[in-house]
Length: 212
Image (tube, rainbow, N blue to C red; front, side, top):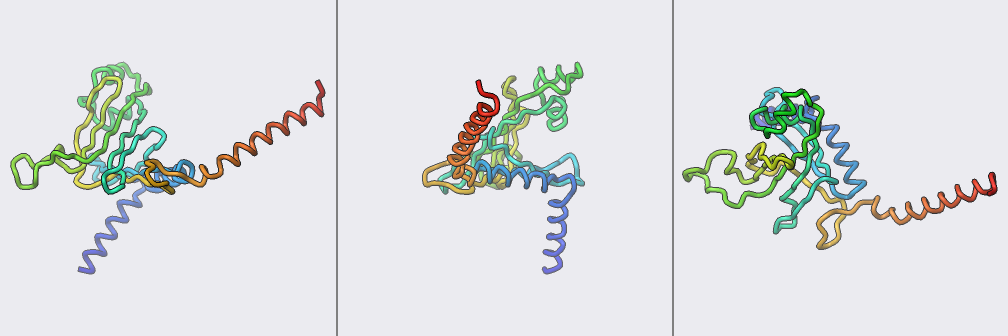
């Protein structure tokens, strides 16, 4: 048993520390948003097309995300908008899964044009109990995950996860508030006051050095 868990630990840490997993980059972005905005998130995505890179870590851009709590007070629903290039959308979802407009842009080599994609992650309430007919497949997993091209109103991918893979953190939170608070929020009044005083000082110095 000890050897099994040691091997499991080595494989898990190898996946996390893989150079292409993006762990350190996403972690730094996660901590920056947590300290600055009080709300941050981390998404653990599986890379099914690359067996050498089993997971991919991505920070959730809270400035473009809407969240909701479940009955237990934890965030279980995240709607996150991405702005990707045509090349990135084709690379992630494949040519056939994209909308006609995105395929047209790809065919005409407009690979850097922007595509707005909404990623919806939420609990699936209509799951068929395990063992019953129709209980298998990505569309019956307990966590629903869907990617939608907003402009074309086109579903790029409709799948799910057997367990949560998007984790939202609130550094500080007041009761009955949804989004978190941060030390930056607490210092905002002082920052605004200092900026105002600094602006007044600059104006006064300019008038002294160069009177009207």
